[in-house]
Image (cartoon, rainbow, N blue to C red; front, side, top):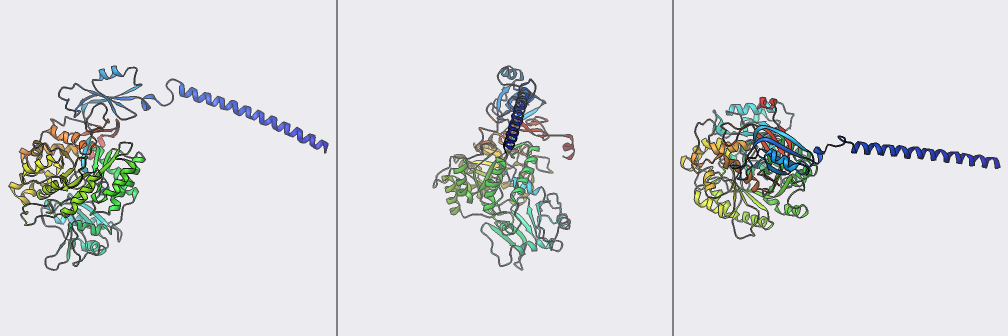
Length: 605
C-alpha cells in the first residue's frame, strides 16, 4: 500500500509538470498570435483601407446643377462627400476642396465623372412600389392596339396557367384601340378561353378592372349585388347581369378573394421596383401604397409597419421612401409614430402621411366634374363629404400630412375645401392634392390652394396619353384648362411631379420634366396648350427640391449643398438645354453608386 501511494504521488507530480509545460506553450503561442495581429493591423498599407471606412470621396470633372439657386454664378465642378455619413461636405472647385482637405479629413478618394452633368437625385412624388414591382411579373396589356390583340394576349397568357391559378394583367386602355376603340371590354370576350382560371385585368389608370365570370362567381357578384359606396358594377342594359367591368371601390369585391402576397414577396417587389427606379435616376419615392379597393386595411398598414420597416432595419433600402397609408389607418399610424417617431434612424424611410380618394379618373369617366362628359356622365364622388371631413380633422389633429386624390374639376374644388376646413385642428405638415388634372376656374381654385398652403402633385407624363382623350370627353374649351402647370406657378401654388407608376406612366422623372416643358403628346408634332408649359429649370425644381418639400425632407434631399445627403444623378447631357431626354449614366445614394449604365442596358433600352 505504501508503494502504491508513492506511485500515485509520482504520477500526480508528472501530470502537474506536463500541464505546467502545456500552459507555458499555450501562453507563448497566444503572445505570438497577438503580436502578429497587432503587426498586421498597424503595419503601413495593411488592414482596412482608411478611404473605405473613414475617408471622403471627391467627385470632380462634372457640371453641377445644385438646385440651390446659386448655379448661375457658381463655378463648382466638384463635390466632396463624407463616406461614413453619406453627407455632402463641400461644393466648389476640385483645387479648393483638395486644399481645404489637406491634413484634416484622412484619405480622399477621387472619382472622375468624365465631364458629364450632375443634378440632385430625382424624386418621384407619387408612385406605388409594391404594385409596380408586382406588375413587373403580370401580363402587360399596354401595347394592345385593338380589342382583338387584347383578347389574344389574354388567351395566350391563360394557356400557360394551371387550373385555378389567377391571371393578373394591367395597362389596357380602350382609347388606344384602333378596332373596338372606346368600347370597354367585357367578360364574355375572354370567358371561353379562361374558364378554369379567375382573371383580373386592371386598366391603365387603376380605376377600372375587367374580371371574367370565374372571378365574379368567386367574389359572389351577381345581378343582385348592390354597388358599393364609391364604386360601380357595370351591368348589361337588358339582362342586368354584370359585364365584368368593375369601377373604383367595386374592385374591392374581387380583391378580397385573390391570393395575398407574403411579406417576402412584397419585399421582393419593392426591391425590383427600386432597381428599376435607380436606372431612371430616382433616389426617393413617395409611395402612395396599395389602394384600399385593392387590398384590406390590415395589409395596407402591414406594408409600412412590417415590410418597409423590416427592410429599413435590415439596411435593404436602396433609395429613400416616404411611405403613405390610407386615411382610415390614421389611428394605427399615430400609435406607430408614438413608438417610432416620424422616420427610421437610417433616414432611408419616413412616414406620417395618410391618403384618400375623392374621385376616380378621366379615362374611366369616374373623375368628378362640374359639367358632364360628352357621354352625359358626371363621375363619382367616392366618399360623402361630411364623413370625409371628420376623418381629415382627426388626421390633422394627429399632425399628419393629408394627401387627397382629386382629378375632376369638381373634385379639386371640393377636396381643396376639405383640406382647408377650419373645423378641425390644422396640421403643421403640408397638405397635398394629387393630380389636380382638370380645373374649371383657374383663378379661384388656385387662390384657395395657395391660401391653404396645399401642394399640387401633378403628373406631366399623363398629359401625353390624355390629350386626345380630353378633347373627346371634355371638348376643346375645358381641355385648355387641364394640366395647368404654368397657371399654378403664377398663382404661387407649389408643384411637385409624380408618375403614378405603374398606373398610366413609367417611373421616369426625367420624362416628366421633358413633358412639362414640351407638352407634346404622343404622335403629335406640336405642344398641347403651350401657354401652360413651364421652363425646363422650373420642371427640374419640381422633380427635386419641391418634391422633397412635399414630403418634408428638404433638409436631406432635393438640392446639392453642404450638409445635404449625397444623392445625385450623372446624365450624359444637360437637362436644361437638350432636345432629347438624357441618359442616366450613374445614380448615387448617400454618395454610393447604386446604378451604373452599361452598353448591354443601352441595347435593351
